[in-house]
Length: 572
View (cartoon, rainbow, N blue to C red):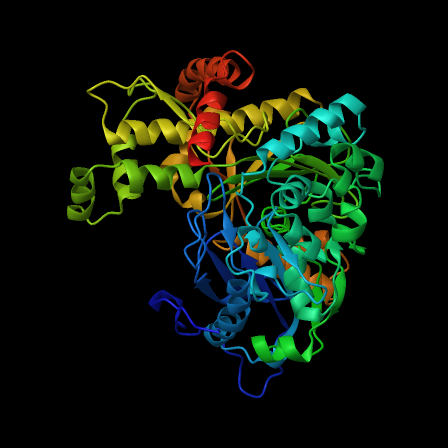
């Protein structure tokens, strides 16, 4: 296994070493597997103090144009290599322990979280099919990343049939099943590569596969199974439904995905000798149930009660919230009992592109002169554009954008929708467009919040986590657009901290997630407060956003779908 450690991943001076001769304070390790990298975090059990961390970037990154051997990929594909995840365990965990100055013997548990829905086709023993001789050049043998959107046609057929049959589970997902989720991806695998489908003994969420590698036990965590696997009230979509969808798909549940279900915070098993050798952790410590990177963040932000919506803002944004009531929210990604915190109804919504949109603009659309200006000022392009955008009054740029560059997850659930900016003139400058894109994502979040409120699931508090909370302009725009105060998580490593909290529960250090969250979580209350004048100005622009949203997203004009269809046709 090759090592790909960047200089910034090296250990820093430790300030948490125990007093010589004193017993080590128990710690846990949380590992967060993101889109481009994995992060290991060492956390003290007693108070949640973050002692050391390390990041390891995936050697292969995201495969969206070609496989490692050069085999080209079609539009909307996004794959990964499972071996990259094991390198995170092998390299990031020991470095995090070294930075913390903590002996591995002090570790009592480990927990992981993953992007979702990220699916791995494996053999019976868990070997990814891309590692099987003869399959290295087969795209369907690889990990299908969460943002793999090439199964939209399968999702459309699934939704049409579910509506026709009035399937009771469909309203639990806002009336639409996403192309990102298990059933659409599984059906695409069957229809486009039936021989690979036949060789797939298990179609596994990456969140469960990594736990399998750690403790040797294959299970299904309640979060992934509910939100991405259409598990509701203890049952999946029926065999009869799947047979009508595609006869050869009838046994997908029993053959490929139905495995023992475990609650969040449960101990799935103990670290195996092989996993101990890989990670440097002690054999036999607790291994917690897998989790999704967004949902696991809620306890890290001390947001396990009803009405506290957590926005996990990174490449995309996931909106998660607990409630004590069950309601059907249009366009939500799902409502799952115990999906965020055991004993409560967990709701999820999301935006498929947020940070990814900003990154696309700064890397693909910004001219050389702007880059040079940023460099001369000693700023990143993001920082430079944020500085320019912050000088503007609301509406000054005369632009309005739709934040659909990676499709729409909520509330339209349509990944064939595309981004749009209107109002461009020859006087438009990069800072103008950048601000319009920031605002568009804020408008998208406001629409999600209003949809929850209207459905009888009131949003009473907003807590922001994720890397984008570091942009103060973006945070203030969100506060002004939503017209609510924003609290922020008191950690730069929310998902990894959330995983560590679950590891502490699995190890028996706390009786439940609520208690562990209260002791180990971090939150800064009302970090950003809305400005009344700006909030009023945004109300008018948001009304135009709603009109534009409904026109292109709800049948006023299907031009986005036609353009996407033409693109696919050309690439065939």
